[in-house]
Image (cartoon, rainbow, N blue to C red; front, side, top):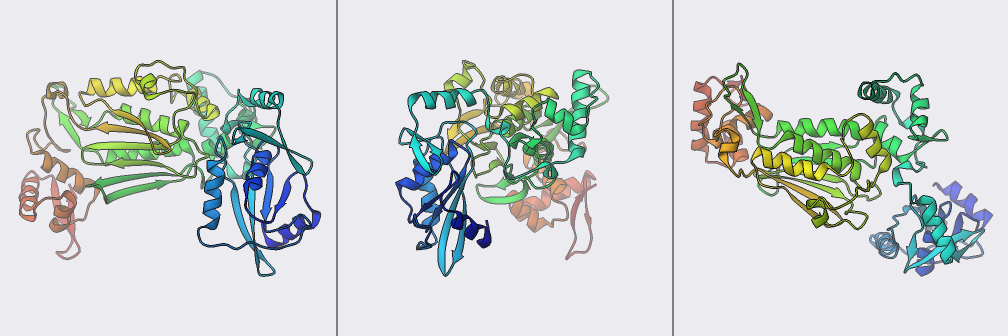
Length: 457
């Protein structure tokens, strides 16, 4: 909203979608709840009930405190969009609220709706009717008020249709947009939140994922930031994670050697898919994946829903209720997930069969976290191999040499002192390991003594 738009709104007075408040108080939160339960609207703070501009006094933390108070006093939590506009040297704060997809929203266990230009408390029948109207829906089926068809990629839709045809052995005869309409990914020609997540053309502001490779608890040696469609994010995350894992070759007697990563790639893929389709995208925080020397953690905004506990997950004692039904259905239609609710048991079984420690599942902060551990339960399950490097360095080679080799592969053009720092080992020791890898003709030094570094051959 700009200054001209705000002045125009003020001139029209309070309406079904506009309410004025002189200051922030409990009545502001009630208005926010009422707008959430109807058509959305704007609560404008710094205007009296006669449309006179009086302004509000703000510090750097004021607005954030107000937002936190709104979150703490609404259920489900509402996070309004905020604009601050200055008129006549007076600051005006605008809380913009969209209609909440899953209703009703409450404050202090009371429910409100907007009627003409005032807020009315809902009776039990009205509350029940609102719940029944939305219970079979989810956030991602709801129209996205901030994006339209120009914000999605036809090429990405066509790729999805091709995968749909291959998976279901059918021939789709609709245009890309007609197909999305048939699948309810578009509704009445309008973009849903799910359509935006699945087919965003460029930047997708709600799907940000951060992935980092850490040495120790804080030192980042490689990172990836993503904010695009979630199909692309799945592919990019898996490529990055695999690039930063150790790999060894197991001699099986066949012509081709078996490639083995520290962790079962199938388990990682299952975790990432669950991370993308079960995330609470209404939460402003992003998904975070951290790769350490001995573990990988996957954090996602949004705790378990439907009363499910961690114990229920581990005992397979629950009925799956996808947080985002549209995106989960889209993944299933092209075979990226098998069936709802079976992901946790598959992850556990992948790790068990791989011979590594059982993963950890926990509710953490305002979200859910999965931790994969590198620790092996039984070396015999892993072919009796304790080391090995890409390109045939013997399986008995020290694990640190394996790690050094992989580090050179993912971070080329580093000199000995830089590699020693990254791998957290003495310079002289790393120098010996480099000498061994050079004799094996696995690495070579390229460039001048000042600007060059080691590369995998």
